[in-house]
Length: 626
Image (cartoon, rainbow, N blue to C red; front, side):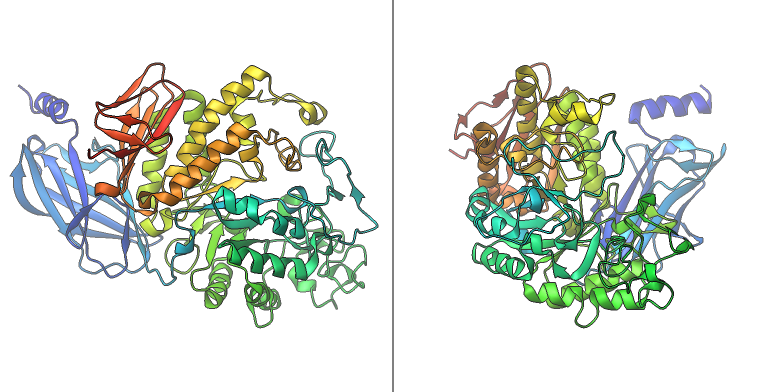
């Protein structure tokens, strides 16, 4: 028998040529993270039939040269040679990549990610070393975040001034937001429905009853549009939302209910109709548009003064800001934005398009916020894996200790939707496992787990409606699901929201998703909340899930393990011991069974000889000791 044939037979028997393992302080871990100051070491198991002569660890700090460590043979276990690799130093905070080089009689091989062998150098995986300096926002534990688009949530009884240049819609219940002729066409968005911060205050009992522990407000700074992402003046709360007084009252009243409030921090761009740019002269003509003598001129990059300048994604009414020293002073210097709003009672910020902010700006901003409230919640808008993201040729360092507590968990959203639509449990499991391994545990615990946001279609529409890719905006404005589509969508939504509420992280509900709202992308996902037409079945489901979250300590635990992930069945365990909870969902074609004795936390049902669930169902189970 030839050496190569023996190798192939051995590989078939064992499944892999190599098995790498990572140790932190000599304890084996499946995570790709480690606290600074801990000893990191590695081992590599290699099939004896390879005839390994030497083995090397290639350990590389991001952007630096490779460091090579020769392995020491330790033992022979089950037909595999075991080599150990100890680093000469404890790594500083940073992102590191590692791989293995193996010398054999047949040449030099490298360990591939799946444990096979290849001829080219490859990094098998990574280790994120973090130096956490900020206190975690534990006040979020067991609760949920509720995302409010202020103009569309609730009007409230208290009157506010209405600008002369806006259009105010009067049909709250059936109103369709203004929309452009075709998707992507420009609108200045000066049409309003009249929601205010006073209205949010009036609905605090509703939010408390839903289990909300944190309100995430869309931007409230003074601005021309209804969405307020075109900041006009950072130091004023928009008068049409109730001004500074309303926000201050909201902070205070929410605190009485045990609810924190975070603001949407838009620090990458401002409005062309703003104090700082002042294209239209509404702020006294002292903005950058007036010329080089403006104190704000250096905030912007003019290509052909005054009408051609850098703008966010080329959208002219959103000139991009250069974060020069005077801008930074306004945002997080003495008497600036952070000091004002944290002093009023804010619990943190969600940072809009954080990928576009410079590293030192984000660090300075986070430090300033945490100085006011050590457990403030700082969460960034990131759509990808945030542990190793490169944006604008810069490797981001969100989780190394000086920046964010969390990011918006869009990858998890994609995994849940794929599962709820098609039963792809493997994709969901791979998504969750990757995020869980790549993020430090105290970051995973506070990920903002979203299903819908102001930037996405309503989750109910995603799960049951026509994709409408070839439809005009006029058609999308009035499209609704058929009765059958909605029935299927609600079934899928219950599975999706069950996973959102029970997987690691803090679920964030976009206003109205719990009421059964439908709608395609902006502006159709921003209709007014249907206070007189709430879907009681969906609302009751959400309320039950939030109650379960609050009652079980398992949902604040770091321990997490997937136990089923095939044929449409997805199941996992949160926590350890008597307080552990098992979650199972079935989007397959047949019944799903989980052995054991359980009590359902959803309906109180007892399963003595195993839990069996039909398709389109799920449950949250506590082990029955009786």
